[in-house]
Image (cartoon, rainbow over all chains, first blue to last red; front, side):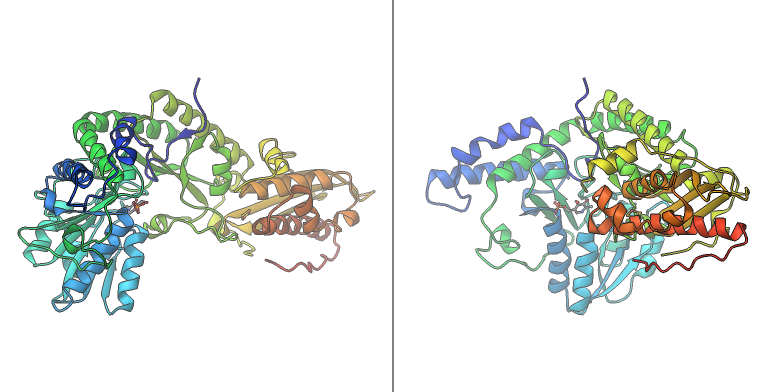
Length: 404
Length: 138
Ligand SMILES: Cc1ncc(COP(=O)(O)O)c(C=O)c1O
Ligand code: FES
């Protein structure tokens, strides 16, 4: 028997892998020391665990341990990267290039920096959600210090040409930060060959615990530094003060090790399930995939169903946990700025669902989801006056709507 | 968003989904809302010319569960009422019956608007003045 609802929102967060939990448990009670306590075995034991985890994490992205700065998650990593670089390289310039479909932790940090005197360019992605190297290069100015482009998008899963952007950035002497929260642990990310200077990621999107993340900060070619955003004991080579979250770090490390070992095989399995889900749902008329299907994370699909409203659809698919891109604006439920900035047509005359598959997703669950979503969409279209008009060949744009 | 049991019931078993012949003289059609606002409601009534009684009512709604429930409930209430009685249906009656939270009040307003629009359409077809809609919009 399938247990309902089925979790298909792994881009929001992932369940913790039991193997991660097992690795963490002793560090809550038995080895509870402060990794900064240098004078006794309690501290040594904690430090040892942190060092080991740092290696596991660094290895996953082909970095060295010293380049991993622990944070509370990707939000903090993004803040530290952007604010830290802006403050550290202020005399070099004040211009930052990013994209208007980045995560809020990037967009809002940029907005904040604009108030501090930064100049920010928000690029518009191509219709498939990706930016091109040429586009980014064209935005570079003499005062550009940083490019921040996400690796894989959290809403549609499209993957940016990071390696090429990094190569181009280095040619111009500009740093590249990437929010790789959705990508690290899912697809191979190699900070060296990908020419990345700073990368944000987090434990809870890769079957590790919540509240622990990291910022990769390159130490060689070039040596990158960020100004600390938290004053205190000077932990993490002075870039992030605060007693280390040892249990979280141990779990994060284990999660990275598991990802490293299982990613290749798991990616193939997930892509197969995702493709099945997508193929089946696209048999519904007037349904469309949002974003690139060529350059995409293996576990994500985002599908729009025209003539069905978002909130109504969410109510109809209550046996699966997914997230929805758009809903009625009248109740001030904002439509997804990501989809809006992709320039989806007919704005809200459609609704979209984001499916994020994960390590614990089974084929049986996907089969159920296919049926469940199809049933809901068909039922709602039977109820939808817009669907009826569409079927009668009436152009919705030709109608004078009494907007309220 | 937690929905009341009544909203869920109307959503799962909507009453009177369908389409009446909008070209017929004794059918009034109200189409309100806009796709960009995320809600469009179409409500139709079929009126007995002699008695002024609404003999049938149908709806189709593109919108959230509360909008679907509001229009479904409206069709239930309309059937058997005279046009004049139908005009007294207030959106707050719908809010109360469905236990709609404040953010969903506009879904009920839409239903009331749809009722008025359908009645106006019917009156116009009958050569009568449309009644002025005094309802403020949210
Ligand atoms: C692309 C991206 N960046 C940043 C974050 C924030 O991560 P965290 O929850 O670890 O702060 C998320 C998660 O929602 C994300 O998807
Ligand atoms: S129709 Fe807009 S929230 Fe119900």
